[in-house]
Length: 186
Image 1 (cartoon, rainbow, N blue to C red):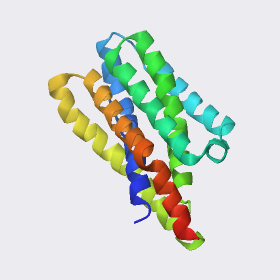
Image 2: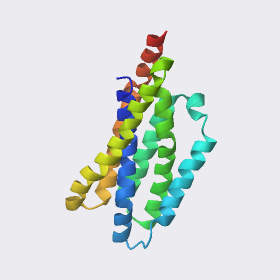
Image 3: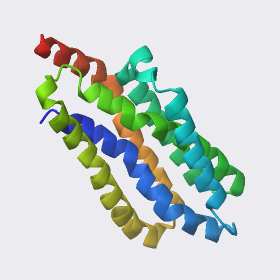
């Protein structure tokens, strides 16, 4: 059970990845962009680079704060892609979204294990990470149904809203939730 709330936060952050990988090629094709290889390469480089350089950020700034910031960046990147579907807009969206993705999962997992006894951490991380699979499975399916009637750009906007919901939850409840978990462990 302790992995469900952080798992839902992971779902909010990973939802946009399903949209990005499923609909970026289709959106780009509609815009006359021949290949999305460059966007995907930049996405990967930003995520990997920031995870290496910022590996200690959850410890330094606090996992709840970094998770919220990461979700805001994800929401912003998705919103840019949805509102400014152009070559330049997709470049900016890719970098901003990738920065959010880079820290979402590590920070939320770090937050998830706060106050969890060592013999339960594997179960909490496993439950939390299960929501990555849920997001990758549901997001393209749900958004694909929507895209048929709205086009591809709105799928990015919806993904931005989903990430913003996670960020808002962390803003309202994240600190209290983390404190209660720490108190429960003592």
